[in-house]
Image (cartoon, rainbow, N blue to C red; front, side):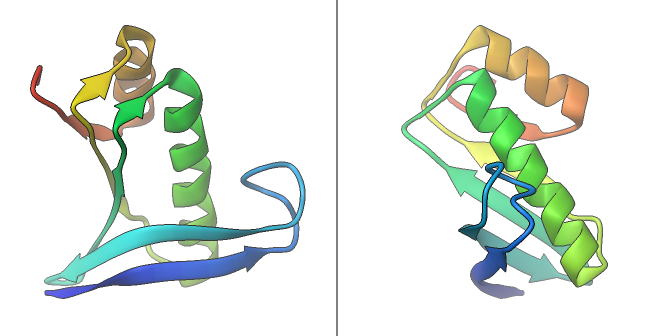
Length: 94
């Protein structure tokens, strides 16, 4: 497996609505790209932001990644949003 950090200048503002640097942890194993977000707590907005990062990664790198969030606290609305968007969530409750 290859573990690293993907840093990209989002000139078009796809993630935040204005040009900004986007960073995310990436694991590539057996050709599968996994984007991982580790946070102390996760809201619905955090899930939507992470999903947009995944879409940007897919467009730039050309590979559809698995999206994984790890957090000890995930808001109930965030869980529902993640499920709808196909994002895996790992927490003490799952």
